[in-house]
Length: 157
Image (cartoon, one colour):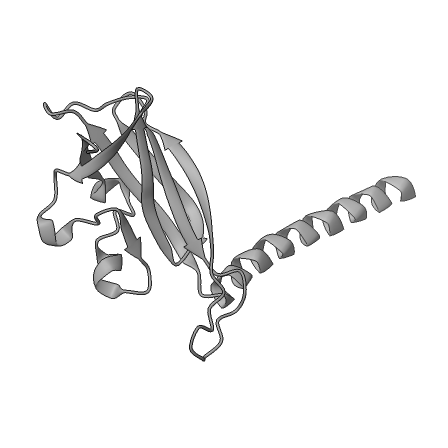
């Protein structure tokens, strides 16, 4: 009985440590000036049909250290991740932290391509990226499936 109780206490302690570490990680990202980022998009052909198996590469800018209230007081780093479109042409970047996100590359059938937004007015086009520090830019972020932006592939010159 004592052994069972000790195992239960150890398990509870381990779960508490994992929970505190997870919450602490999120708090640290916020202290460093990073915010949650999600980006939803769709790649379509000229007829508006979704294009599967297109690789979309994101570059996320983030600060690994707390921002200091002086010029150049933000530590700056980047990382890249790739998302592949599904059968409907949809792609997404979800649940990451940073202060900016850019579409840094697109590959279709092994060829580098460009993207052009096709479903939003020019003023609402997130272009190739969004800075989370700029309110007008942040407003353009397609951060929910309902705000998903469709992009047409364009050949690079």
